[in-house]
Length: 117
Length: 306
Image (cartoon, rainbow over all chains, first blue to last red; front, side, top):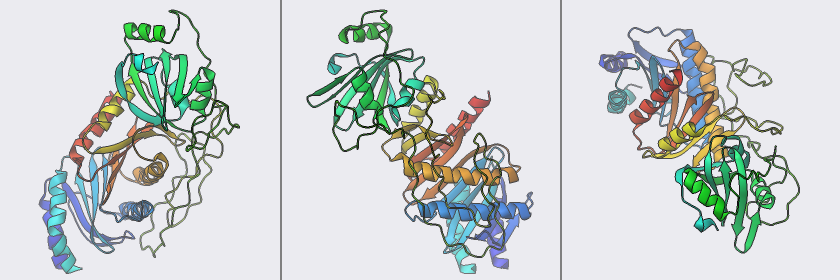
């Protein structure tokens, strides 16, 4: 998992990114890297809720696979994108971060993340 | 007769229950053009006062209350609002043989008294039996994904749902399926005016953006307005499901005010956001510029706060 941490660390270099993690579809965090944010039990519960709910919502929409979930608040946003099967990459960033840059990095690093899982 | 009427300045096409027209045109002067199946009609409105109702389908012409009854017999209708200048209004009144200053206002019904013909049928001058339901239809139960064992317990349902007296939902480890039941009984009083001309202008401007397939303004009870050629009920089910998720997570995040949630699936994006005391739901193509939409939603919230 040290390799996975290294990959996740690449996200923290991006401006405004506070955390990057690989999660399972039930919300369990497989690996995470963070900077300036606390991943406590409450945040984990939020992630679990998001994962389960968004998967269920996408399923109810013609059994569609979830391509991306983006939740934005005034100060932070969160992006979840699929990596493989039941694994997802989740990034939390300040709202000043460049979303295009983040989604590009998510796609660019997907293969490498898959190879570590 | 319809061809002779001035065009006016179009505000946009939308789909909504007929009652929406009466509760949202208090400051509107102009014509509401209505299309139901292959028929067309209109309502001439002067600041909330319907001056005349007209509908034509083939050789059948309905005027006055007969036309109104037919409009009300449809749960939702597609219509276009076009503003008139005083001159255009005057001309339209002449064409419709309405004398200037005459308050030949046909009373606006409190609730649709005449009910929905099956949509496939052509309009009939005679009214069908009453059916009060005009707003929501019960949602079919969606398939519940089989829950896997969860190491991290997700958040429970919020105990209170804002603005609505809803029976409390039992807390469960796995969130309920993304289906909200329609209210057991439709409202029988006029719905409050929640959108004004400015709202309609904003919504129609958003709808005109490249990649926006449909836009809906909705609340916990019903769809308030829809622009776009989609079926509203399936869209609302998804929107409410996303909304339920945001209500569960927002109290647990110290991230500031909720701006929007976007669910992307291969077919496109579904975006929900707060809009005044209601919510917006946008259905977009996959290729839309999300950054552009983010800016619009943020600007909307800033203007609301101002």
